[in-house]
Each structure stands twice: as C-alpha cells, then as structure tokens.
Length: 266
Length: 307
Image (cartoon, rainbow over all chains, first blue to last red; front, side):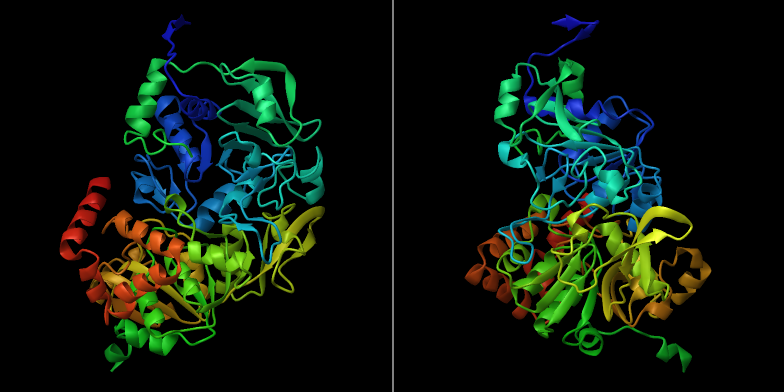
C-alpha cells in the first residue's frame, strides 16, 4: 500500500505501532525526561526516526546522551553514551525539571485512572498493602513539572481502574481544576496516554481521559471493554496512522535489535 | 605526622566496625544496577549490623539483602526495585507483611532532603508531591512528614517543606580516590554528592587509588574533598554485580541468580547468603566465586565497547 508516496506496511504488531505512535508526540529539539522500559524504547525511536536533536534527560544525571540499545535501568551506562553532561539527580530532576525546562515527561505506569493519575506505589492499606509496587522514583516529579505528559502502557482493564488506590503521580487528580486546587503550578498540562488499542488524552473541560484515536482495526467497543472506567470517544476520533516500512526498520534494527522489548509482551 | 593522620585506607571489616553501629541511619549510594558498594554491605551483613534505617533514592540489591535478613527497621526512599531485573522481592514481601516501615518520597524529594542536610538547614522546600498520596496524612509512618506553606512573597502559591536528612553514615563506591579520601566519581552522580556532604560519617570504597599529587594537580576533577570522608576501602570490582562507569558493566547472570533466590525466599535466599557472603571472609573470595578474572574481563570489555 502506498500513501503520500511512502510505503506503508501492513505487517506490524499493535505493540510496535504503540511505540511508534507514542514517539510521534515528541518533536525534534524538545527536551524529554525519560524513565526505563517502554518510554525509553519509544524515546529512542523518536530520536532515531524524526527527532535527532531531541535532548534526552535521565534521572540519574545524563543530559543529552545518544542512548545505546537498550538500557535496562536509569543507571545503565548505555543511557550515558556520548552525553553532553553526566550530572546529578538534583541537576536533572531539580534544575531542569522542577524549574520548568522539560517539554515532555514520558512515563509508564502500573495503574492509570480516569483522571490520568498514576499509581506505582500500593494496592490496599498503605501500612500493610495487598500489593507493593516500586514507588514513585522520579515519576511524581515528572508528572508534577513536565510541560506535557506522555504515558505508554498496554491496554488492560486492571491497568485502567476508575480511581487509583493511591495517587503516586498526579494527573488531573479529581477534575478539571484538580491540579490547580492542589497547588501544582503546571495546572492544565496536555496528558496523552498511548496504548496498544488507542490513544487517549485528557479532555480539559472534564479532566478525564477520552479516546481520540483508535489503533487500526480496533473498535471503540474493544477499548471500552478493556477499560475499567466509563470511557468516552472524542467527537473528532480518528485512526492512528499506519507505520511505514522505514518506521519498522528503524524500530527493529536501530532501537531494539535484540528484540528485548519488541520480542515479548510487557 | 600529618600524612599518617590523613591516611584513611583500611579494610572493609575495620571501616564497618568503626563507622556503622546498630540502629544507624545509613545513606545508600548508587542507584539500581549502578555503583552499589557491595563490598561494604557484605561486611555489614557479616558483622550483623541491625536495627538499621536505610535511606536513598532508589534502594536496590544490598537493601533487599539486609531487609531479607531482618537487619532493617525502616526504609525511606523513592523506589525499591531493580528495574528490568524486577522488584526487590524481600523488601516487597516485608512491606506487604507489615514487617517493615517504609516512608515513600519521590527521588527529587529525597535529594532535596539531603540538600537541606548538607547545608546545615532544618528543612528544604519542594514543589513536587502536591496533590499526591505521598502527602496523604493517612499513608505515612512519620509523625510530621511534611508541611505545606504559602510562598511568603507570592500568597496563594503552595510550597512543600520537607525535613532535612543527615545520615549517621553514608556508603558509596567510587572510581578513584587518593589515600586521604579525595573522591573522584565518574559518570552519573545521582543523589550522592548531596547525601555524602550531609552525612556525619562516610565510608567510600574505590576501584583505584591515585596519588595525592595527582589530586592536587587537577583539583577540579575532585567530586568530594577528603574532609567529608571517614574511611576508604580499596576494592577493585567492589560494586559487583552492579556496574561502575568506565570500569565494568553490571553482571546480568548474577543479578538474575540473586533475584531467583530472593523471590523464592527461605532456604534459597539463605543458601545465596551462605555461598556468597558468610562463607567468604573477604570480598575477593566472593569475586572468585562469581567468576573471577574471566568474568571480570568480559564485563570490562562490555563497558569499554560502550564508551
């Protein structure tokens, strides 16, 4: 299939397209704060595919590295390769992020609720939880201070509860003015969550996530079935663009040649 | 003899005996799979230092071992995990069973608390955490975890105050030091500079000893001057299985071996400790068991290819 002169590929997985689509929300030249896992893979793809001047920032201190495939941790030297500076955690989370110099904060998450709040701490009672997750790390700082917030995760009902048991990282908290009431300076940021079924974004009039793109071949009904809260469709809902053969080549050859992320499910 | 007084080189056993007491508030350097001072932590485990409070940003494998052994009363951190290698199983189980107090902060919040500590101030402001359950009074273990105030110069702007943190002792592993303890840290620095300068005592292990002459010739390369450092332990490959930038990559096989034992718990976890810690009188014996020079050369080669 040829579209606008580019060869489109029908041979892709939704997992691959999720990564490619998430990367499309990063513009060349932007400063992007990235954790490990899927956000790292998608940000690496953006840097290779269309944003060569993107400035990677990693919480252990690397500023503007040319990340090698694929760091297993924020302290993996692969994330320090050819950086402009290897600094401190305070320098990146404090000086760059809290000061407001980061364009995009890129997060994964254990649970995301209808107001785009993220829980990566506990399920159940705090002092003796049913499930203990790793905790905030830099995620609370990123969700509080980045100008735009980008999330990526697989679309499963258990990952999208109506209300997070614990808000580790604030989305719109409990409504359109939730962040403002809490005193967060960046009170109405764009929040976009890309999954293997859809792209959701916060509707600023309600503070709630809404579907504004569907993955090719996925019905809105399927998204609704796999979401733990009553999700609505944007009146302008469209379909995610197909990947090109070149998109997939870059993803497989330059971003994840060993198939660490593409070869298996999250 | 000024020179002799300034020589802080000692064995790991002596450093732990002199500077870590039961009940200590211990600042942990490194992050996740990078630059943990495993040689010092092994010694703390052999000497059964107990009733500890462990603090840092990301607490990983050594914290998990000490929690699994019941040596820890409390942790304060931003995360407990090993990222791609999974969760810190002993820590997770202890928290879920209500056996361990853990106070959650974000990573910036933790480094902000060390920043207050290193400047001799009682608290430090931050604007993260607002609106999150990290500030929920129902979900914390500390009587007074934070205070929200109005910016005195801009009424209506909220600011969170966090209590400063001054560890009794911090434990770090660095690339280079002279015998006086002038530390050179290469690569990422994470929360270490603030934490080290906030600590009442500091044990540093290092890969390489350089001369004081070299330090004084290039003082701009010194990350931490000797005045903060209490003890220096020379232990090449002292961070295994974690990585040291410019020296060696982390050891994924050993990381997985530990994770398997920690996940299983019980005899598997005890077996790991017996094999790799209790039955070794020094860290060098441990390094032989995990693959010796052959393994070291491979991990070193992997690091060199990455630089």
